[in-house]
Image (cartoon, rainbow, N blue to C red; front, side, top):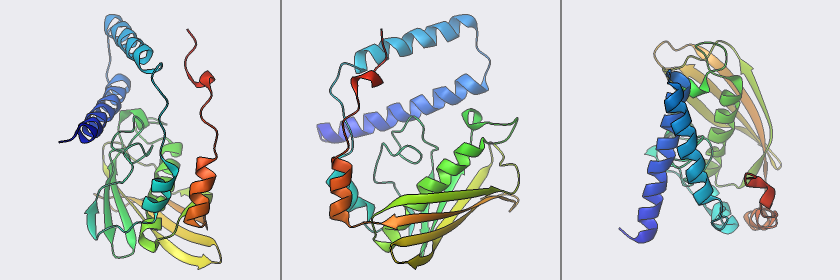
Length: 226
């Protein structure tokens, strides 16, 4: 394994550890000593990381890979740091992605840190899930695009600790508008928890890369103030 691959695997391991500790912190009682030790450890690691050089996705490979094809069946996300489905993302949902012909089916089990009202998911988590999974349709149709709008309707409480299926597809294309539809169901019961529609705006990959590359670097103010 090359040094670059080793770093990617280590980042994926660390990302999962951060997600797991978040769920443990929210979903389990802890003593004052444990909480203070956790806070001190995380603050110390943060102090080590912040002085390092900034990192971000490279615009051109992102634009090219966004429209790359996905195989039928199970596949892996291409961007490890993708906030919702990336394996290295601290905010990830540990999604299992599948392609069934022209549809994307994301299997996910929401956990303690995703709780909104008692014993059900926060609605914003569901919105983020739809937005992220809709993005994988772009690999099916080979078209770079940005999210234009997203509408979510909540039909029933979305349970925690139960497998869910987020299934999405392109419904229609009108000019540059890619009109998408999707549903979120509980796998065990078939209960429809939420449905969504979205409009993505198609963009030329070259322009996509140029627009994303022109964004300014994060300001120093993003780093915590001592």
